[in-house]
Length: 456
Image (cartoon, rainbow, N blue to C red):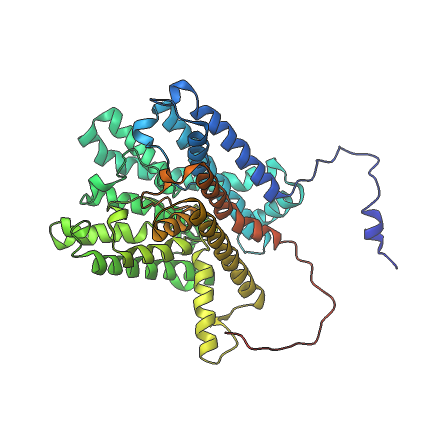
């Protein structure tokens, strides 16, 4: 069998020049980094001055994992159980988890051929070939700047509302904590009832939703919108993300308003239509991985809870601080189904036709998500004696790294919490790992005869 000169020379030892760096696959490097930071965070949270009363290793590990994966599920109350030092450790893990994942996601998108600037594409290719921290840092610097600017704006706005109520020290600290938690879609709160005390406060609720929607849209979408400033000039990808996000937010708000309007434990406790609308807006947009709540999640009707399951499974935009199967995947599945039912084998939208490869990616991502959730629910139901809806809600929330809970988290036991920790990691890293795997495609050179058989 003949080989090309390039193939022959690629296996020859290099006699001179600098020593080559050890090649590490980016997904493995990402997983190792997460596990190391989770371990460090766990140890820091176990320090005597990190907590008001001692926590177990399991409680510290669960909190560190939840923070690093920007989920927000907790087994002990963040505001009352952890000291300022412990809360700052959690904030650092949230920031590292959010920025680290967003940087890796953007590099993956660029390596997959997503068109941005040529310089950034070259940086992405080099980073994935060598896993060079120096080159990855070049691409990550602009993403970090985007995050810090967004958080600075959010911090100033939230300070304006928190300081008059809480004073300078506590007001600034609350503004900082909620800004970082919201932008990174983490859902950690300083109060055991999250943001329920501000259910009728338009300034705080709209600022927080603005932060986690911005983080959930991601660097690529926001930068293109700021650069193009015209709907007609936007890429098909950005148009899909913006239009689907708007539709889901409006639909969820209207549905929550309708389903909970007369519920005496949720919207029924609020006076005035606008207060109800504000609360419905917040609770409608937060399930797509933000994890905050201004209404009692356990008191929602069954119909609203099922709706939240769908929203948590969908998640936010790719290359962002959000998780889930992603908005683009949801859009592709709906559009492909519509095209098939109409007898059209081509999936068309915004004057473009979807490639077969992209459709298969969407199917693979959704399948992985469904299998992960099914296995988690199956294992949890064998370990935990609780309402099925509560268990399913917990599993989907963990996969979507949302952080909303119907009060089951602390009742799961050690085995159940380990399962949720694993699901949080899979939900946060799994789709990105799949995306990277698809950057190295080995196309088969042999084609087989096609076959058809009944489905459905």
